[in-house]
Image (cartoon, rainbow, N blue to C red; front, side, top):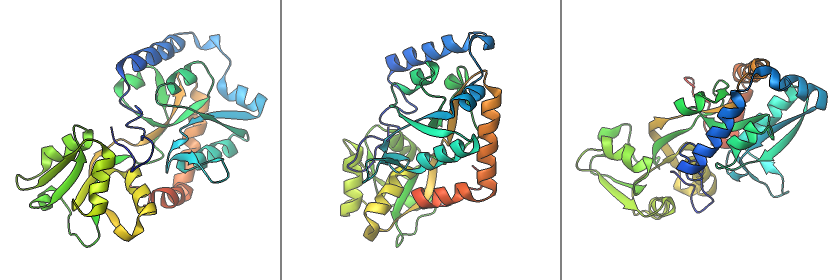
Length: 278
């Protein structure tokens, strides 16, 4: 339920992990039906990729810094770099498949995509798809200027914090904020972010993706993460009964984390190192 500043909705808002009920039911039902088929009902995905020489990877194209359309009209972002890493490891050409929060599970079920990026792991999804090890952090955090000393919930006492009313950000910070904290609620995330940028609020609660975007576009405000509230890292989502493909993706991610490649991608797009406990 969290959005970018004056941009398109983030994965949270375009229902990334909180789908509209009907869309989620239809998508999960379709995927569940596919996964109920015997493994012999379809060819091994890794073999198919090797034969075709192409791997189809579902990505968001309206969600910077994970995926957006660059000046040359080509997709760029954290997920695009990860997709290219996977393609290289599979010795396959990468075909980026533009997806939305509503259609991407169906794309995976219908095998219009071999895998999806930026998938949050939930008990419901675990029943119908498999997940790689995490490759990117996603969390809600309190952000503020470097000049303001805030390290924990106790430090919110007497300070103003902007949030979008009724969102996960609102609920999360309200639970921990001292009574003297001034929680300023706005009708939408753009209003909450604008309040911080204009000085109406000293702090704001947003996702690390939004924080990175604000830092890139408004460096003069020097927003930095003070402390995190809620974490749900990103995984690669794959169809069940594809153990060889899953193992190859896990191997690729593990290697990229070990040799520093994934950390470089995190620094490039999120302006922060890959968390050690990811």
